[in-house]
Image (cartoon, rainbow, N blue to C red; front, side, top):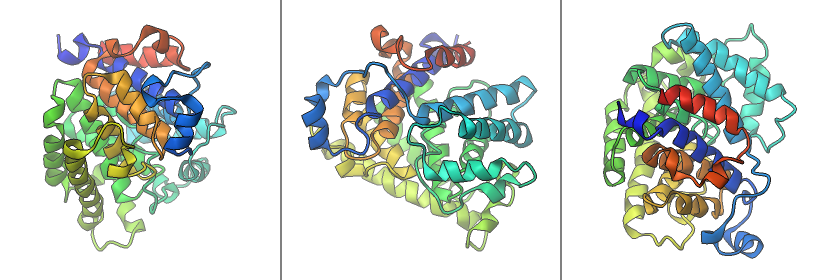
Length: 339
């Protein structure tokens, strides 16, 4: 039995993602002093009642259902994933529940994806590297049996349907890879080095089979130079993260070290920083992530995915896990990928 199955890493990561989202949703758009005034000390932040999630969890579930549909039909391929992914994103866009402060990039891209005659590359927002793509990518780090090429290609494809900037693609790929490493036993103190190595190895690799001619919508002279821009920004933020882990105080706002998380590479780094400050205290990591000046729900949902992948399902208090919104959907997908 694999480590991923034994500790129920998929259930742990999906639950942690949703809990972080619900904990950070009320604090998003507020500075740390305002959060402390309203909710008290950050180490005592409690899960709201009801524990409502944002578009972060909604779109994670949309990706999860799309991947399940694609894999029910056979091997995960670009064509096999693109259609159900497009359908799930459009369903999310048209849902009456899409009222949780969704990102403008996702809304604009999904409105264009409704036209089935339009190639998805023409709907992609090529200049957007908002965090909306990598906050939802965790499922691709949790599915067993994927090749490295499938995981990376699918992570970048799901980003590209909405966020086509090369940094959004690279950060999504890197986020899924981080989840996979933690789920399969990588220790936190070695994680940043492995992520840097992965970024360097992939710096000039454009996944044409998965992305098609997306790169031509940008101004780069070649696909390799297009994707290298994204990996270079991710390498820069990983260097900032490595310095921050050694130097910052847990009592300071993590956004001061690695950014407020509105853009993809900063959301990845600040979510990782919150996890790495408290690798053995997953609930504390969530509370720290939710009490931040930036995109608190996205930072906290990423921190929750990392912590849940590392510790497993037992990371989260039952009283919290049982009442988070969409609990049955999270359990269904978690059980599927833990099986």
